[in-house]
Image (cartoon, rainbow, N blue to C red; front, side):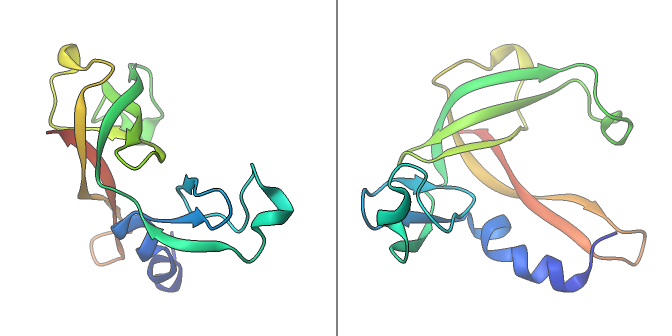
Length: 133
């Protein structure tokens, strides 16, 4: 069960694909980071908020056939590593797609979807997934 406060804190990343961009080398990260793993010390204090592009291409993917019990209702399903048009790498579920038609390089875009809820009257959790363009 999640707290409402935690849900509000995660909104920028979860709803807006809010990441960070290194002011030293320009590399984009999602989720946001406090420092650039490439620049290390030189990036301290230079990481700026960055809204990651919602369009990209499938860099790699996998079809999940044996999933945790909480995902029994959706299996098989696809997860992918998506390289956004601005260079960020994001892992997410691919939805609204025939699993047989997924391929490396396939153009996709991020959409906001309901993930789950904490009971009938609890907090609703939203997040992004990717769909074919």
